[in-house]
Image (cartoon, one colour):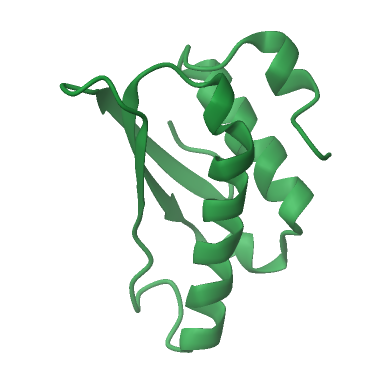
Length: 99
């Protein structure tokens, strides 16, 4: 699923565990500081939503618009994308944890 600030790729988990990977290469930014911030935002957003997810594999890819996001905005967008993919209940997506 594609949102303005990130791309989420999901697949079923063969080992019945929730796993996530974050890909942020130099195409996102040449500055490591900006790439690391994007990774941290996505990891923290995933950590907050992890308890509500079914067994699946996720790959999160930030987009340039994410440079200006706060942690709460990133969590809200990730929750919305996961709800559209059918992985997150609507009530959790409406008010994600710590938002």
